[in-house]
Image 1: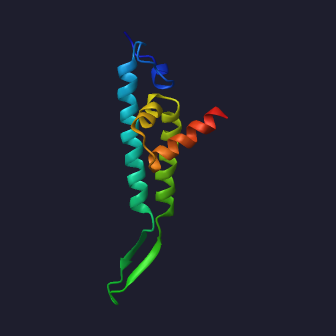
Image 2 (image 1 turned 45 degrees about the vertical axis):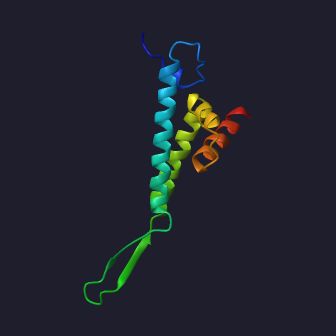
Length: 113
């Protein structure tokens, strides 16, 4: 039986074919969004720069705002995917209320409105 993409774009009930694939996909998406948030946190408040070879002073050339926003945009995009799949139900069942879950819950609320 071929896996239809719709199994990953909707809530799949336990009695439906493809339920276990949808659950596995939900867990994989949760891990992926967690990686995006970890990456974003690694850029938060960071600066780029170098040590001047003559004075040995730290020269700051910029902030990592673009990298942070890129990682957060990836996390938000994944949250929209998770919000309409079994990943949402997994987070609800786990009773999560961390940043990852809040992104998904907000995306789910936006889809409903």
